[in-house]
Image (cartoon, rainbow, N blue to C red):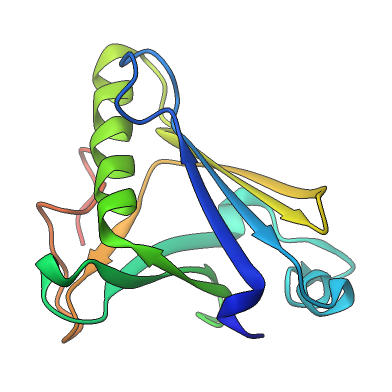
Length: 149
């Protein structure tokens, strides 16, 4: 699927720490393509079946990267979209603040919409950020305490 079929909106960053940040991914391509990729065994992938990652396309201060949702078992990308580093870094910070202010494991929410219709919602606690060479940027990533990578 083409990355330009997707849009990204991040809400709840820079707000009060007791509000869960929400990433809304909009898809305006052929609906059956996205639904097929997000389906396994006849049903949509659940939140425990997907991982979220972000990789920079250049230096950190270039501001460009790719946000991806992948099937946790196969590692196959379900979807990828271009996303500004500033939005992702703000999301990570807001999710950390939300986690410190509340007693909940999930730190942020991803909502996937297709053609304006709700497709899936994932409450997540981890977002791994990689540099353009594939190295994990621990200080930029959202990694729950007690998780060892």
